[in-house]
Length: 325
Ligand SMILES: C[S+](C)CC[C@H](N)C(=O)O
Ligand SMILES: N[C@@H](CCS)C(=O)O
Ligand SMILES: [Zn+2]
Image 1: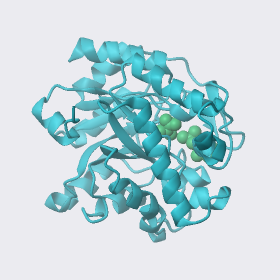
Image 2: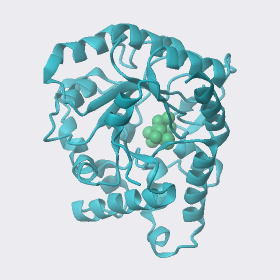
Image 3: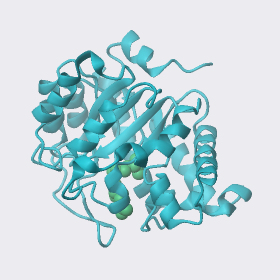
Image 4: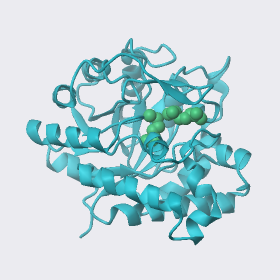
């Protein structure tokens, strides 16, 4: 059975909320893959044995992770390509040419689609420019962020993902800087020809990591008016603090009441970018039940978990989504 295009699915049933998967990189780490390296969760796919040996240990781990998120209730899942930009891959792995990079992405998407089957929706995950220098939680893009050529950075991944029919949606996630947001939103259908969403990396005080307020974010979208790419389907927050996430989503909803939103916070732990480890932060103040109810009240149409959330979290999210929709 063909999948319903997401734009149609969300429009046809205004109450439908899709359950997303959880933190993939950190879940692979929980299961024994060492992701603390310059391409982070891309690492298992770099080794040729992943592709040539069907019984490779890493291959089993990735398959089992997808299975466990599916069993927990995920209806839309991501490719594990957060740090798989051409720049990150070509600078840090033996994959140096655009042709070899293209082959890598196609293999990962094919493999992900095989893992989740034909019925579930698949997101082509695209991490921010800052991921390759690990500043997705500071938003510090240097002294002249307006001069960064974001298009050149994303183009190889976009060119591949745009033409891959196994992907239903592109996800720019953990975007911490307003210049990057403006760049993505300036691209028309010739550059972004598939439906896409943008997940913002927001500080626990409720501003984008670079200090931009949610009103400032909304202004960029409002100013574009009807020039906005019709493929821009959802805006939201990801890898933000679990405890603060309902308030942050609510502030985005107030600023953009008609925008379909999405939310997938992290566990509340904080990433140490030097040591590449997660440090405990405050305890969870709320349950997923409470948080999901608030997200839905704020217009969320896709809800899941980001770093350090597990299939158990997705199970709780799924139960809450069923209860409140
Ligand atoms: C979302 S963070 C945990 C991704 C990893 C980071 N960019 C790093 O390279 O360590
Ligand atoms: N999509 C990524 C999140 C990075 S913040 C992952 O799930 O690993
Ligand atoms: Zn994350």
